[in-house]
Image 1 (cartoon, rainbow, N blue to C red):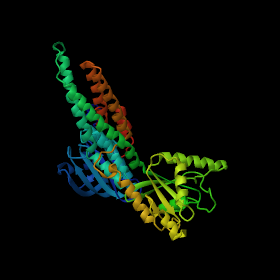
Image 2: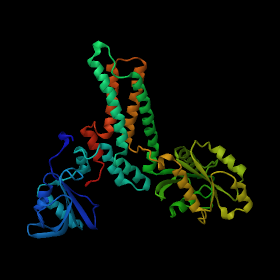
Image 3: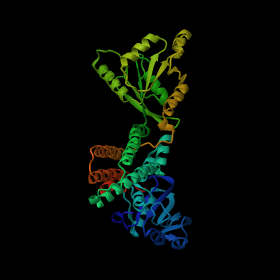
Image 4: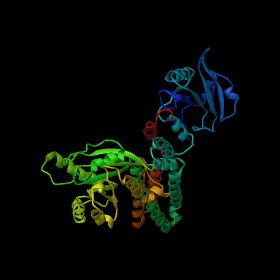
Length: 459
């Protein structure tokens, strides 16, 4: 709990989406939450009811009935914010919700700021800052994997790893601080060999977390999947087939696509960001040349490349020459043998022995299910996506981990150079500071405002 940041106000907000709906929920939290609702509620005396109970009645402004409601009662500390919380479920009319909110404001509540309910939960010790941020990620999750990662972090998986790292450093920091108290006696309470070993272990763990950030970005923003190939290979047709809509213009004229076209699709709970690109060829057309240059830039940023070629007019030798000319970085790729419906059995056999080849016809959608299955296999083959590994998805966490890693390197260098305990202790305290920023053991008002103002009002 951080008393200086806590507010004794009772806050109120609409907790469900605005607009018409069957049900709307208005949430209040704070010391007067129960008494404010009780003052306008016709039904049981809420202040005499146990926590975690539901009560039917009416909300009245003087004698005028505004709505029939169900009141959910959560008494401190057994609530989301660890304060008294009341949730009023009413009919989902914007007029009704507006009237109820105005009534609660008149009775002494104030409108909640964005994320203030979760901010109070953090300040009251319900969970740490990393878990609080995971609440926002959970609300924003739009695939099975982003949901899985956010749920794990909200339940403390990432926090436990950070706290374990911090606890080990605190032990050594306290031993070195103890040495300073006995500096005249020239004693060592902190085993320098054990400290070196600990730093190496911590660096390995932090490096693993830092490397997971790239995967975390993929999970949050979608797997960037570039569709590349020669003009008229069928790239735009494939994009339309993957999206099940006419997103890109399809024409028999080579070079129709001159810019990057991008859209997203969910496949098996994973969000893919498909990027259709200009056909790869030498051209004197200025605009098309710009498109080809952008294609090459997209290939460098891709997590997966789908290289499309016309099965009916391409030989294995020509395909190898095309791939060699790409100068593609070390990015996983699939070879898509398109226009299977126009190819002869002999042409199909020529490519049957090659690895990573998927046969399809984007125009007729033959083989599209095989392609989707292969795409999912490519993603699931990555251990970070399927294992129990902690994945960093938050830029703030990444920056703090990077600062911790840099400072640990300074501690290691200090040990190598025989620095005295006071200098080592200072560097270790900096490590503790950076790790503490992740979980909220070290915070500032500005940091909290920056985090919680990004939440929706009512959460």
